[in-house]
Length: 386
Image (cartoon, rainbow, N blue to C red; front, side, top):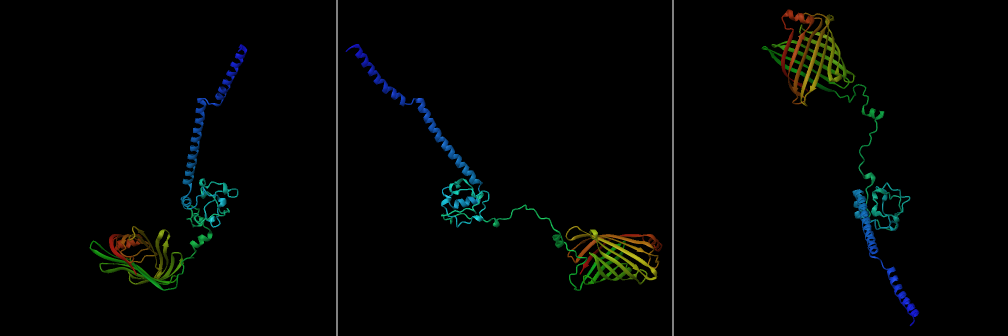
């Protein structure tokens, strides 16, 4: 074989060996490239798992945010995550009573909605047309009218009609009926012992009649060492003239001091502001004798049964009357405080202190007769009414 022939044959054999080797090298992956492909496959798997966990967490948050009634309804009813609403028959379900009020259903396609991620408490199904599904197991939501009313609603301002209904104008005393009733009370039935000298006193009133017309009886007096030193009785007609106030007119008869005397009487009695009981009466007697008597009384409720009564009484005279031991001007002022305990409302014993002082010409007449101008005594008694 010639040299040329040997050279051509060697080149052909080399070419045939080189082509398969190059083809094999072209289709094989180097180790680094194979590791990179495996890493991308593992990363895709982890990303899918992470996405699944995120979806599960979101579903759990939505489930926790849903009201308890919706979760109970979802547990007892259908699984909306697997139900296509395009195939459901909701014709038997009353969604008008469901509290779904935050989703606009006009543009919502429920056939493509994943209900496993949507809280039904935020949806209004009242306008949806759902067909072909049996809703007998659907949850029953309470009507909004069955729920308790919300608190904190503003109170409307009272109108003139509301005020008129709550506070009617009674125009004085309201007539309840025309029955004849009566009342008797002794405000003071008391005794004392001052330096061996015993004394007693009384003060009371009574009335009989209707709400508009009453006959009043009033009396007061004192006894010392078994003798009556002062006593009088009044017979008066009374009629209400304003709320809490009565006008009275009649006669007063004095037994002592100075013997029997009769006076015409006119005055008012009632409840003054701040709950002061007030009596103011003027008297006109024989020979132009005049007199005025003002009495104010206030009661302090210490407990439901323990009451402190404060009393002030003043007497004024128009002229001197030596037979009665009184002079013109301010005659006497009497004040007292009595603490009573109401065993019943009708019967209440008390203890107290009474003080009396003479002034002006009355004080001069007492001084001439040897009587004290001022007296203070401790008293005990009872207050009764029936």
